[in-house]
Image 1 (cartoon, rainbow, N blue to C red):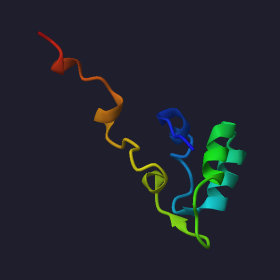
Image 2 (cartoon, helix red, strand yellow; image 1 turned 90 degrees about the vertical axis):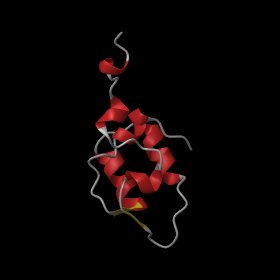
Image 3 (tube, rainbow, N blue to C red; image 1 turned 30 degrees about the horizontal axis):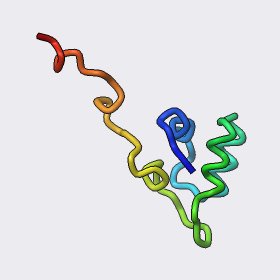
Length: 77
């Protein structure tokens, strides 16, 4: 199982909190890439565990806008 920013972004609008089965259903209904569905199927989930957010699935998911954008001011001379 591997996550990239592009793959994980398909779950941003998922109906959080959600179970593994709900997330798989969401990914299929929204046309997410097959890799997203496969990653969700590989999650270890005990007895209908609820995932509160994408961070429960991929702890390194960047949330701040600063994580997404290059800051020009830092590199100007």
